[in-house]
Image (cartoon, rainbow, N blue to C red; front, side):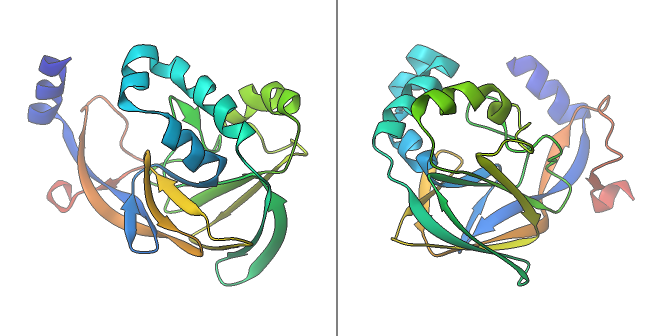
Length: 204
């Protein structure tokens, strides 16, 4: 693995990708409110090392029992407004998070768009039932899920709640999420199709 990473670093293609920002904090993948931060609190480094991806379902079940529904007010791009009662809000800049879950089936780290979904209050059996669709980002048609998209997303909650991103608590609500285009330069394997990514200035 180390040799493969070194080979990519030496011969790969530089590209620039966007990052997400919540309040004054940058994040790469997904930020969440409600259920997500409680899962992050329960996923210690030891549990991740010992259980790997199996640690996430365990942490999720524990977090669910400790999560109370809350009301949120969402504004997309200073225009459309939504008032919802939820247990979870996730805002993704990239595609993957939390042990391989997908924030939205059409999400990409270079699309300069944020993808938001919420989980409405539901019994545990239903959360487990829809889990595979939510994990794969195929939740567009589920009644318990609301999917929204925009470059700027503002979220107010009925009580002050922590916001976690990339596994850490970064800030609290109210929260403003934005896309920061071309914020980070990364190296990808030369064999990867980079047509959907923004090339670095050195690549023309």
